[in-house]
Length: 277
Length: 132
Image 1 (tube, rainbow over the protein chains, first blue to last red):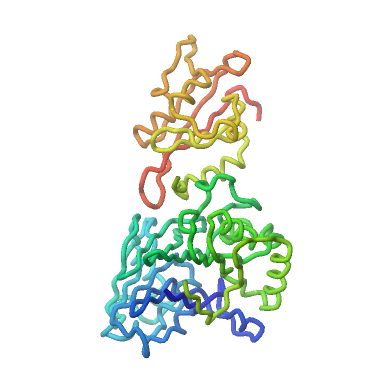
Image 2: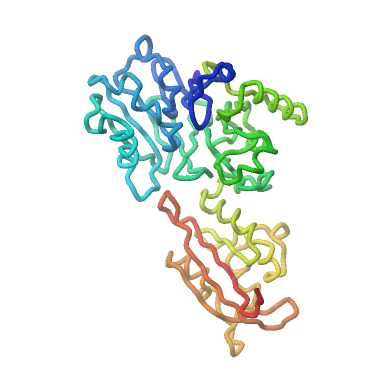
């Protein structure tokens, strides 16, 4: 399967030229296998997906990790949502006192958005994610709640023997620079276990994290430790801090990688990047 | 072994930061974590024992009433919460490592997270003679 990174930036989109190399769009990745496609998260990156010239199925499945604004702010603006011939299935975490539909409606309604959910032209179907693995076409999908403020899941997408794990917002250990030594006490561990590709939050350096405890994100060191412990085969560091330029991020990454040794590749996520697993 | 539910993992992270003894059990009553203050009660370290089955940890601190009568594990708040999935509270006596009885209060709460499934229970032990 092919994984396309359409949005890699956390918190809010950026348009400055200093952030264009790693990308200014907020989280969205696309997973493609032949004529099937899944979209994970609907940040502004979703606006970069070409819905016209390939995979023109009338059904679109969007899986949301959570409803923080940077993960849904593209929902109201991507073209198929205004196409009455399209059937859009939105999957998101339950676990709240309010149904997923009501929580989405609080964003997709005035005054934040000019159109109410019921007036959106496409056929919108909203599903709360089940607690067990399920299938969409060829893909087997597992979601698990992970450590991040509000109901938030990570995903593991499997296709035959290949898998990709996506945990864009994750603070596996609050206020601690290391993970618990037992694997079964690590948030998100099962999702990452032996995966071919892990796309994971790495917003901070270890020093920066000290002042951001409880914000829901983690350091490059924690992301790499989780990846190593879970025997992920490749790590993509995701959810770049929008307040940092590409140069800032690259320098911090170089410093991190020069002081650690791992037996699997680690790289910064780049908007527009395509990865085959 | 599958990873614990996120609410159990977060409970351990909280317990790790507390100076009161905390015990965490899974839905079967197996003691899956206890923090450093709890190690003083059990007289054993978590890193040495790992998980403990209910029959083992339930008797480890010799719970008894004011007359010295033994309290069976099923009457302990944590075991009650495992069975009923509701909070429980009890004041009773346990024996220190030196064999001296002291009075404690135990409050246990069920851990039911976003998946709405019972993931286990957490208990806080409070030494009634503790000066804070």
